[in-house]
Structure formats: C-alpha cells, structure tokens
Length: 192
Image (cartoon, rainbow, N blue to C red):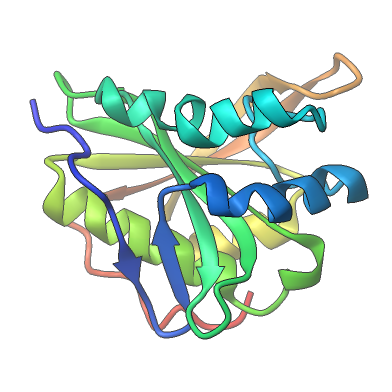
C-alpha cells in the first residue's frame, strides 16, 4: 500500500494544488457566505470560528492521514487565490483504484482551471502514488464536467443509471469516465 504521503504540492502552468490550512479561513468564509456551490459535501457550511479552524487544521486532512484519499485547495499560481477544490476518495489500495472529484468557484469556471487541476492530480496519482485507475463520474446533464473529463484524457465508459441522489432526493444517471496508468498523459489542459 502506498499512501498520499507528506505535504503534497502540485504545480501547473496557472495553478497550484496544495493542502488546505488555516490561511484558507477567510476564503472559505467568503465561499460559505456567498453560498457558492462547489465545495465537497463534507466541507463545513457554518461560520462558527472553532469548527472552521478545526476543519482546516485537522478535519480536511483525515482522509490523507489514513491513506483513504486527499482534499487539495486549487489556488492561482500567481495570486494564491482559492479557485476551487479537488480530491481523490474511495481509494482501494488493494485494487489500486480511486475516484476523483472537483469543483471550481463560479467566477473561475470556463477558464480551463478544472481541466488543469484534474490533469495535475490524475498524473500525480497514476504516476507517483501507486494508483492504477482513477474514476470520474459526472451527471449526464453536466456538460461542463463532461468536457473537463474528456480534455483531461479520461475515457468515457458508460452510464451508471440512477447512481447518485441529488439534493431533491432524485436518483440521477452518471457518466462514468476513467484514466488508467497505461493511458497517455493528458493533453494541454485547454479551456473548459
């Protein structure tokens, strides 16, 4: 078994993927106040200082500590501004598999950031972490995420019918994509 060890920092042309920390509190508060819809479901939605501090100091890092996944902040390389999140989860070291999920702030969408972040984390997982397969699922109605997957070199495998329940309690169909360690590296990470 290989875990996501150490202080992970992945650098791309315009982005840096790095662990969340206390310095991200102001940005996270701004996101929560604006009710932006890109955070993973396990992120806080309240503005209480102590729970936010605990989450940024410890909670967000639990997956990594136990070798079960990793959450990374996606920040602008030149500005350090939080533009999104990306993470690996549902890791099976026995099978060498993982799922990936990402979300970009509304003001950062359509600029190719998701594609760049997805390419960075996928290449790292497949070439440096002992993962053989990274799976990505996108709602059949989410055209932007489907384009991101394709531009990041993911192969469409099929539709998982009724695979994910939405906020209204309705099960939605998901397109399943994957990248394998034997696949060629992602393209240039062009515009979303």
